[in-house]
Length: 225
Image 1: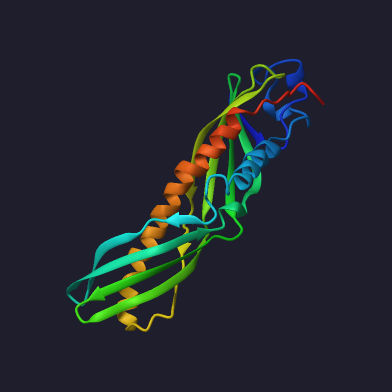
Image 2: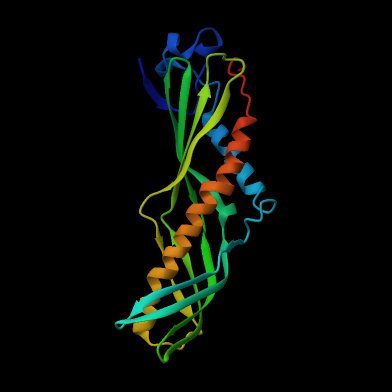
């Protein structure tokens, strides 16, 4: 039978019998799975510099865009993404357990996530250089790990998923950019779309790698008070 509880703790009863035998709804207050998620978050924050994630380089862009029935050219460069180290856990983790395996899930967020880049846009006789910066808002990251709780004195875990979620948005503020308003409006989509692709990529690869490495090293003794 499958049961779900808040992950503040799993297991006084698991010291004597398995979760499947005991039933997670009756588990005591010995193990705080929130702290497990927090250890992963702390490792990500501590490894931001080692993985060269602060600032994270946004790849240069050279692509076309449409404006006033013409094809323009957009070049972006010197892109920087700041704030990955502001990752934090939002609310309590949750767990679902069956047959000695527990799936731990939690939602993560960023306290402050920003970007900035330089660009040049040309379309006909219009265009020129410019700068843009903005915030990434409402971005959540869903993390899930699979824990083997069949041996209460040696619980091991592995990363199951780590992916962006939510209706997140990228704001923009053009600076020192003397361009026609309509032209700037035409640049919003290609610029913000590129920022979203970059952020999804770094979360799905570099940051997920840190999370996976940390989780693989976790060993938790659930039989200890």
